[in-house]
Image 1 (cartoon, rainbow, N blue to C red):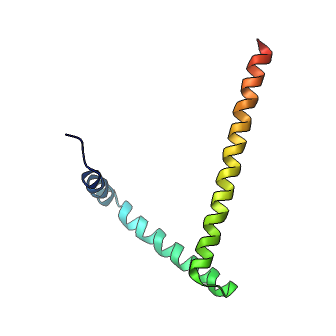
Image 2 (cartoon, rainbow, N blue to C red; image 1 turned 120 degrees about the vertical axis):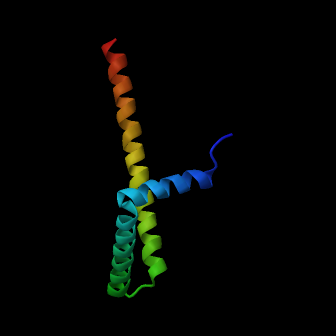
Length: 84
């Protein structure tokens, strides 16, 4: 019988708690919340707008990195063909 997602998450949480990662995650979440609040206050924009903008920028960077990786892998393919 396969392990359910809930069981897998429980196991992960138990391991994370034993290694102190849960506390670290809480600190990071608080820091991110504080950062979002600071940016929203500084820009006089609602929190959701700051989060939306951040997500859009991350998607752009991901797509750029993905296309760069594709370009590099195609370059290696062309290089290998040229060497043959």
